[in-house]
Every structure is written in structure tokens, then in C-alpha cells.
Amino acid sequence: MIHLIMAVLLTVFLLYVAALYESTALAILAFLLAGLVAAAFLLVLWRLTALDVDLAIPMTLAESGRPVGVRFTMRAKRRLLGKTRVRVKVEGRQLPGKRGRRKWIELTAPSFGEVSERKEVTMDCAGGYEYRLRRVRVYDWTGWFYLTKRVNRSATTQLLPQVHELPLQLSGAVKNFLGESEIYDDLRGGTDNSEVFQIREYVPGDRLQNIHWKLSAKSDDLMVREHSLPKGCGIVLLLGSKGIEKSRPAQRDRFLQIAASVSFALVDAGCPHIVSWYDDVTGDPVRMRVDDEESFYEWQLRYLLAQVKGSDVDTEERYLKKYRSEACLHRLRIEPDLSVYLDGKQWHSFAKKGNLGEALGALQLYL
Image 1 (cartoon, helix red, strand yellow):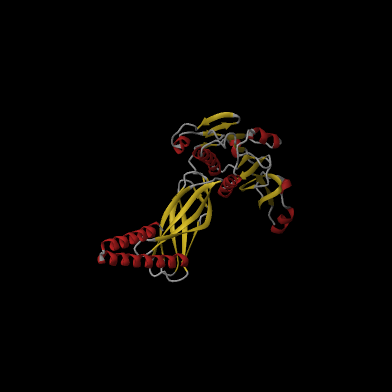
Image 2 (cartoon, rainbow, N blue to C red; image 1 turned 120 degrees about the vertical axis):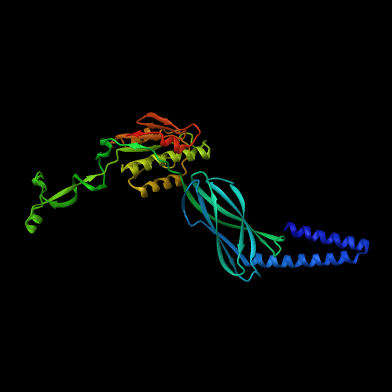
């Protein structure tokens, strides 16, 4: 629009000078420029009313610090008289939040039909993000004249924290922790009479109470019921919330990276564990069991969607009060000030600046 206005003003100026000096050449130049402006305006108006632009994010989950693909779809409802240069203004903001970063992105629309273009954007911190399409700018053949229209299209995605390697060593007590659980080991049998792990042939040393007499009579061999082994959670991972509302996005992301790295190290070692944090809405701890990669990603997504606010509540104390009858071997608590506590005592602080992956990789966690 600015270029169109400038061209109109230049045309008026040329006509004024041509009349002042009675110059036929300047008059012809002014009329040619006026014709070019009129043709450009009509062409851009035709393209602007015929073109529709939308955006989408195919991946609803991604990792912070990695490029996220934003797909722009352009539909030409009628012929645009050639390929069209298009610029779109996109705003990316972290949820919850007000104003985010805005950026102009260059696209090319088809002369007719529908086409999609993928552009990559990168956000450094974990959390929920919204990408909103604010303006669409359409150009003429010369690429000089354009018109702009406002739009309001949006798409959201969740960025999970980066995971770093944390050397972990588990004691026999943690590996063989039983506890009460409704989830059983798929590879080993145990002593829980409520669930049968497998039925196998009798081996000297098996208890007579475990012999399956009916099946043994049918097969002419002694068959034994082997009971299941409950997979108890001997480790509780607590996420504190004191001062989290005052922490910078980079510090909060570092806090989540530590929590995700500890949780993944436990999953990788085959150690079921509980992840818990305080819910300001219900006033109770949120508690999730983590056994595999699926539940590992599930707790992170649930935590990010919860949008935890700062609270003076002692997460560990509140958890122990509510689940005092539940046995566990170790409690790991991570605070927003980047301190990690093991069974109530500080294990390590990551408050110093530096590469978090190197800092975690240089440690050894014994449980």
C-alpha cells in the first residue's frame, strides 16, 4: 500500500511539473505511470480477494531447540495471472503469554489451485506455543506494489524439554523392589497369588500348592502355576514449584530438562517410578506412574498443560502426607532454583551457567 501511495504522489507531481513547464514528455510519463499504478492496483486487488492462506503444525509434539515445521497452505479460488509473491506475518508466542515474536515469511502462491510450503521455526524453551497468522501481503508482477489484508489463523504445538544422558546406578533393593502394584513384570515370575504369570512343567523344588492338578491330569505331566511379580515403584520424582512464577523461561526450561533427564535415565534402566507435582487448582499432588517411553512423554505433556504456578507449598511434605502409607526407597526432588535433593538432602545444584548436558554427564546418581 505504501508503494502505491508513493506512485500516486509521484504521478501527481509529474503532472504538476508537466503543466508548470508545459512539457509533453513529462505529461506522457505521468500518464504511463498512472496507467501502471491503476493496472497494478487492479491486479493486486484481484489476487488478494482470490487468495486464501492458512497455517498448520503437523507435529503436535516436538523438542525444544529443534526446528518445528509450520505448513502454509495457499488456495487460489480463481486464476491469479501467474505465480504470485506472498509475504505473511506470523506471531509465535509461548502459552500462557501475551505478545510474542513476529516475523515476515516469504511464500509463492500458485497461479491456480492449492499448494503448501513448509517453513521451519525454532523455539528454545519447552512449553506450549501458539503460532498465529496475522497479515497476508500480496504483490503484483513487478514485486513493488502490494496490498495487505488482516487474517486470524492459528495453530498450537507442545515443545518437550531436551533430554540429556545421566549416568545411573541402581542398587539391588531398587531393582527388586516389590511393593503393591496392579502392574506385573512380563519377564519374571513372583509370589503374587492374585495373578498367574505362566503355567509350566514341574521342576524339583516347586511347592506342591502351586501344582495345577486338573491340567496335570489332562497332560499326564505335572504342571505348575507360576505367580506374577508386581512391579512396584521404589523411586518418587517430585517437581517443586517454589518461585517458578519468577523464574525466566530459560531457567524454567533448564529445570524441566533436569527432570526429564532423571526420569528418562530411570526408564532406560528399567526402573518404574512415580512423578509428582503440586496442583494449585485441586490443592493436591498430581501423581503419575512412569514405566516406559509412552508414560515418560505423557507426564511431561500433562505437566506442561497444567501450567503450574508458583506456590509456597512444600511438594515433598504434601506428598508424604497424602501417601504416607505407601512404601518407597528414595525420593528425588527438583526445585525451580535448579537444586536436586535426594531423600531430603541436597544432591547437586545446576544453578551455575554452562552446558547442562555436560554437567549431567559428569555426574553419577546412585540409588
